[in-house]
Image (cartoon, rainbow, N blue to C red; front, top):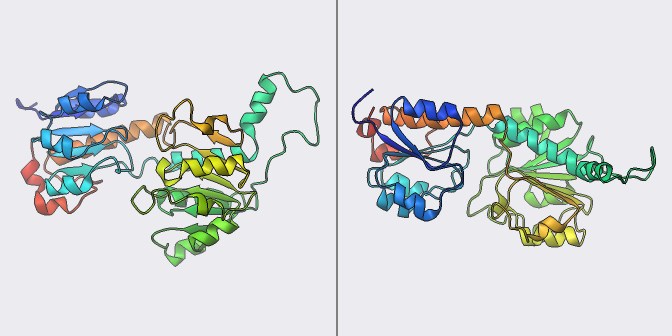
Length: 338
């Protein structure tokens, strides 16, 4: 090991494999299991050569102003909306992420939510546990909605959207999608997927699932006007970013039965407040941002995040570099410390 090891600030406790990779080359400090307060984070970043963070930490100009030595921000997430990537690039700071590994886990959860909300699984479980099941079989008990053969509308056809679409084929669903970039014709043919406008998708789909990144364009993309375009029998699923959906409008829609139901793994503010009106509704499924929450996926995410960081500090271009324009500001050799 070298005498003057780079100092890496790890903002949250991550799986052991990630910590081991870092400690082989760097001096590391882990701030704890829970998200650090803003003050705690700012107090700790001054000496950092690199930061390994999660979605819960905002890495912005205030951080950069204090962390004058900072060379790399590696996030253990696919999304980077918590990082000021433009400012990072200006300052020659490399930003990396973990985009590929969580695809299947998130697509699986999306399908778990579709099936759970459509077939009222949580209600049924509570019905049994609360001793309400008194008749062996009833033709009108806890009637749900069909999934097989229905129309699935996918907003955002990136890696996760594609994985969700592939799973939908097994349910005999008609697949239609709206995305910033249209798929190649070969992909559309393989999935038998139709590229349509957002308005048409909202008005014709039985299940609408969101897989778009959060940006200025997608913030509150699903608002009151767009929800009103949906079928009264439709379900809205969101495993992407909470702020893509206007929660106040969704609450109104569910209370007034403008749509059949919803399932959310992400929220505008996380964790949601105990007085959030969503908690009082029985036509919605709520999970605590667990899209990538499998042992295998989280371990690989930690491994990739740590490897991205070490690759950068070793003077190599990391596989999952987000801000490629930074290479014009600062070459890999210039940030090499290992």
